[in-house]
Each structure stands twice: as C-alpha cells, then as structure tokens.
Length: 340
Image 1 (cartoon, rainbow, N blue to C red):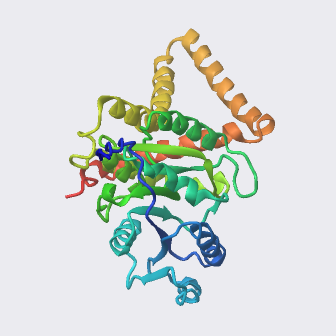
Image 2 (image 1 turned 30 degrees about the vertical axis):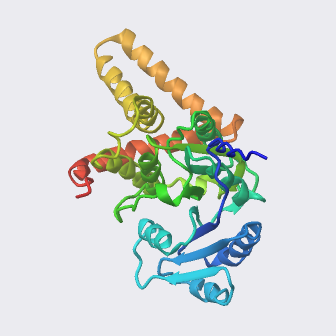
Image 3 (image 1 turned 45 degrees about the vertical axis):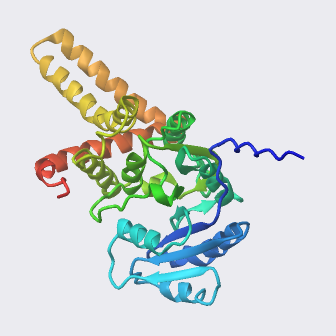
C-alpha cells in the first residue's frame, strides 16, 4: 500500500487558550476584596491552567490583612509593594510575574457579569487580535441609567466592529502577553496608552456582553478626576512615537472620538463670550444674545425637572472640563507633560 503525505493543516489563525494570568490591582479596597477575589477564583476555575496575581500598591487600610487570608490558595500569587508606585508599576510588575500567555487586568471596585473572564479571553485565540475590552454598563451598581456612559458605549461598539477600539475600559480587559509594552510610571491613562501601542499591528475588540457595573456616574466624575483625564490626554499627545505608527483611519478616530470633544466646552464658551462682546452697541444683537442666554437657562432648569438631571450631568461634566482647561493653561502644564 502506497503511503502518501498528509497535507498540511490550513492556518485558521485560531490558537487555543493555554493558560490565563489575571492581574488584580489592589489599593485600599478592603470593602471590595473578599467578594471580588472569590468571584474571580470562580471565574478562573473554568480554565485548565490559571493564576490570580494580586498586586497590592502598599495599601494602608485592612486590604493586606484580607489578601493574606488567601496566601495558602494554590492558584494565587500575592505581591505586596513596599511603597505606593501607581497603576503602571503594578501592571508591569504583575506581567513580569505572570507565567501564562494571556493576561487579564482587573480593578477592584466594579461588579462583573457571570462568565465574563472566559468570554473576554476567547477572542484572543485569533492571532489577529491583541486585546479585548469589557463594557462598563450604562447601568450602575444600583441600576441607575447613565446617558453619558451609553454614549461612550455606542462609540466603542462602532470602533470594536472594525477591530479599532480606541481605548479599552481599564477596569477589565484581556491582552496577549506578546502585545504588552511596559508602561512608564508617569503615564496617567495606562489603558489608552497600551491600546495605542497595540493598534497598527493587532486588532482591539470590544465585547458588549462582558458587563462591568461601576459606581453612579455622579460619584465618579468630580473635578480632580476630570483634570486628571485632561492631563492624561495631553500627556499622550506629547509621548514620542505613540501615535505615528497608527493608520490614518485610527488617527482620525483617536482625535475625533477622544480629543475633539474635550474642546467643545471651551469652544462653546468662547463663541458665547465673543458674540456677547460683539453685541455691545448693537440693540439687535443684544436682544439675540439675551434670548440665547434665556434659552440656555430655561433648558438647564427644565433638564433638572423633566430629564431627571441627565442634561444637568452633561452640562456639569463639560463645565468641569472647561475649568480644567483654564487651570492647566495658567499653571503652564503644556511645558511639563512630556515624559522624558
């Protein structure tokens, strides 16, 4: 009987999940730790090989005591840092300590939907995919709706359909270890930084079914957080070589979806002020200016009553961005954000 060679198998681009390393970022989260760690262990148990790496950024509450109660668990690796160094340092350390090819980053505060880890990791089987993001639900932990989050998710869904997600959601995402780039400690928006490093060579996907439930938006969006975001966006613009490798379509998406909207509050205010100045000495323009002012005030008042504050939240966030722009301008931030 004549033996024939077996034809080579076609490369489908699919590679099985060999193991998962979940890096859990902990800092003063004693209220969340016990429930979250037990949940993650249950989620990871579906994999043949897995590890949970708990990175504690020198917590000063009871976090370390709670974490230590898991020290004898077979699949848990605990790393306590001797000083607080920030999220990028914790991520870098966690990846170096990991032993599997597929990495999942997870924050401490949010609640997660069931089977979320296996769903999140599954697309990484495809060699074209470098990272996969979960979806921060537009319903919070108390089931309250956020219009702003719904808008964010709409944009990310459209980006994800093309494999060009401009920024994973930091609270939970998966990445191939080969695609991970060490993040400089001063970087503020580590999730966007890492995404931009991946885009150009690999796809970044968005999974709407992987639901992340956060605190109420009003508790999250305060002035300090807004200013921090703004600094982070300006910082990335000044980061050498971060954007130049992106495709033209990706660069347009980045600036249109992330940067342009940051200028909207400032541009609207400048248009309003310039028209007000121009109306001086012109009765017709003054009347129009007063009508516009009245319409704006009535809209704000009605939004507080009719829309249950939805428009008010939108106005509040844009106002915070406007104030942050003014502050950063006067402190000369633009000369200091570049990372050397």
